[in-house]
Length: 114
Image 1 (tube, helix red, strand yellow):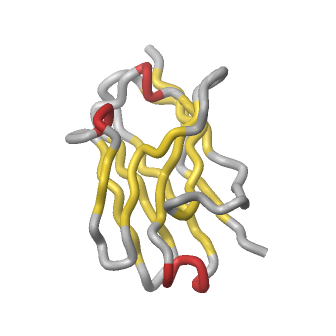
Image 2: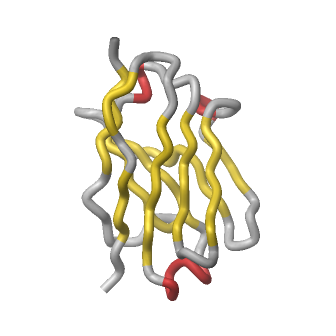
Image 3: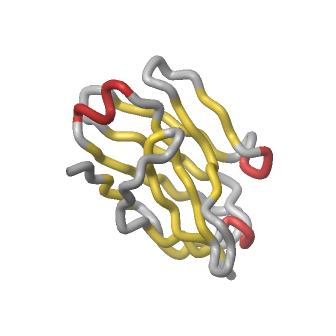
């Protein structure tokens, strides 16, 4: 069974930073591009950033220049460094393959508020 274990969310003031982490199995991590997705209440789940197995990255326009995705192949872990956070970044953040598999983790809540 595929598992995605997200962590690192929390409450942060506007302009602050958080670093999210997601661990998954080596069989998944080794062969697939990995992505971070987010879902705000009442909205669909959207791709925020993705990184291929060789390190190429892509970002949603709304986070370009503020978020950085990276992966540690030795730890089967993908990270999302989020700087300059805005209230509109508030959502539950999930990791998955890109494109997404049918599996999903529990997500990690990110709340940006003063």
